[in-house]
Amino acid sequence: MSYIDPSSVVAPRASLRSIDVLYNTGPGGWSAASVVWENARRIGIRWNGASSGPGVGNPQSRGNATWFIIPEALEHAVMEKLEELSIGGPGGLMERYEEMANDKQREREAEEWSEGLIGDSTAPG
Image (tube, rainbow, N blue to C red):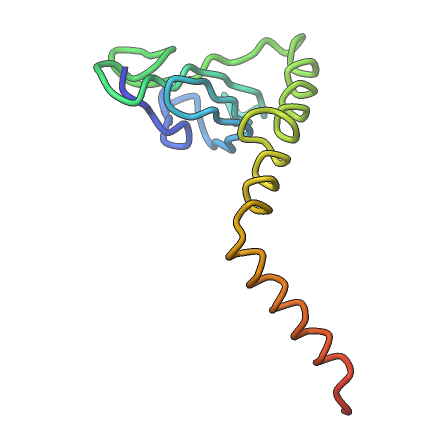
């Protein structure tokens, strides 16, 4: 299967109105999104597809990538887990903060910028 960016999954057009990707584990993984499905805000999930190969992930309809809409009875539990993953899961906020902190050049630039602000606040005005 080829990787399909979840923000580009817009089928079936008759039922789907908007997509807000909530979590995406990338090629070979899965995604979840808040979607407007048949005029109601719902949660959709799908397998993204691998980084190369045939296919469009799963689910699909006639070769077009689609979303599986979570039953309303499960939405609350799914949203709780998505919120947890968006902070501490793979690709989550904590992992991204750690990557930023390990970028020494970026840290130096941020420190220089913040030190410059201190000087600005003490300037006579």
